[in-house]
Length: 150
Image (cartoon, rainbow, N blue to C red; front, top):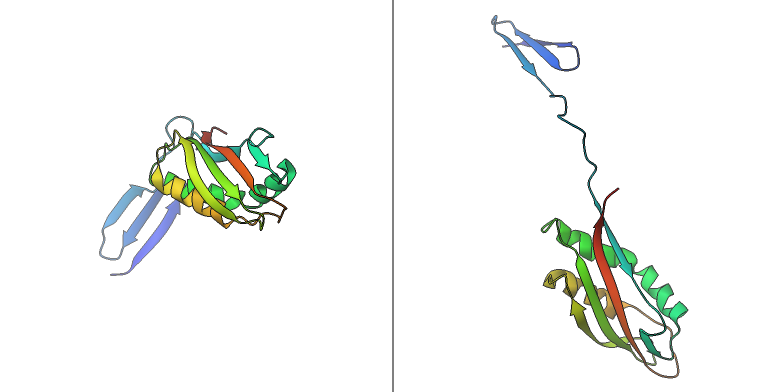
């Protein structure tokens, strides 16, 4: 059976088939009420002289963490697909040795209570290469994971 499709106004389609059957249907309904844009995920952190004890400076730490923020953001966004209302704070405590490698790390505090996000976050922290120094550095960084309305 061959059909001819005629497009009328943007909302109606009329299909005429050679068998003589005529079907009318709406292809789209106008939205009811205003369309709300979705909130977007935001990850921030606070690093200051109180959160660093050792030979690395705040600027050295900030430079490396900023370079890895895309991976940290990915950890959050990946879990947002499973838990759309996920948000909270995760504070990570870690040690950077004199060779610039993270060798001890742990979750210091968390209000997020989402182990997959926390595991992903600690994995990113563990891979961060810092500058070599004359000694080790103890760091505690609080990360804030939130949803921001546009």
